[in-house]
Length: 196
Image 1 (spheres, rainbow, N blue to C red):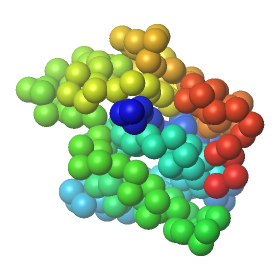
Image 2: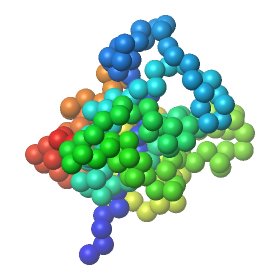
Image 3: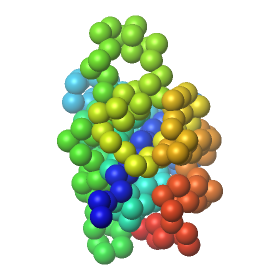
């Protein structure tokens, strides 16, 4: 029997980088930000600390269900996968494994939705995250997928038989209720991935 091919398309801002995590990490969401440079030399402002509970849940769900993670966030345009992983707080989870490492291992070489098909930045600006996800799926056969995002446009073109859109509140980010929707979408019952 062939294994089910599953993907989790995840946004970052509004899902793992939220008003709640900003305040929780000691920043004022309207003013006090740090500055740092990414691998392309862009100066970026904002607290580079993501919600470790939300990321940990997504990682545990992907491991449990043999799903691959795909970054559909605008972060993919500015950062490498390693730089995104460095924004996850340093922590070890059950079994002593590093969350950053587990996060990186769940991505394939084709770890992000592609922007290469867009000839100009105006073309890219006119596209929606949903278009970009559908383009990725046209290159990768998927039996099931989850889109985790705070933007409704990310659900554009979703195949209701294969895909589940989990709409996240951008201030609070991923919640326990969102986690349960994701588990249900992949056929899990009984909170299997919550304990990561």
